[in-house]
Length: 245
Image 1 (cartoon, one colour):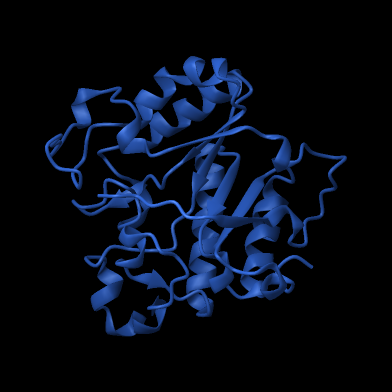
Image 2 (image 1 turned 135 degrees about the vertical axis):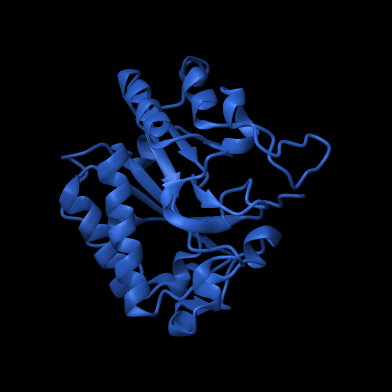
């Protein structure tokens, strides 16, 4: 699978109605972030090597949360102050990348367990390294919501990305109030469970400003220093003035 990275514009969600000033907390722009795909980084435990196939670019390769924890010294030695993980939620058998979510409240067993995530965060914090996670807005075609007639409004065909994998997956309809509430509750739950330091959200231009504000306000009410980054692909700055007020 070819992962094509195009030029992108990053909008700091710290600007979305944050109550914390730059003087109170370290600015996200001061962080040196190491971005990695969990399943392609390092295999720390062979116990979760289910369906591993190094001959296929679309298969799981064995990388996991334990592997990242084992390489924190290496990451720190390179000068990074934060690690950005691809989504760790449960995915279908094609979701080595983390975007084909089937269960928002469970860690994919290919990547490890909640205890593994908590241990990773603990060890990172001991080294003054922050752990950020990409918060997915896509689900698997096999997710129960796709076939649920009561949740047809939860799914949207809109996507601002040119990433082939993400574009092919069902996107959650961020204009649906029930979806907004679900995602905000889920994001807050993971923050509390694992003590992670921030989220990275793709296609934030597809989201209503009210959702962005509520998402940010909820997480920052739990931790004013919580880091939030939004990604917008190929959008002129003038079209985003509503997002950064």
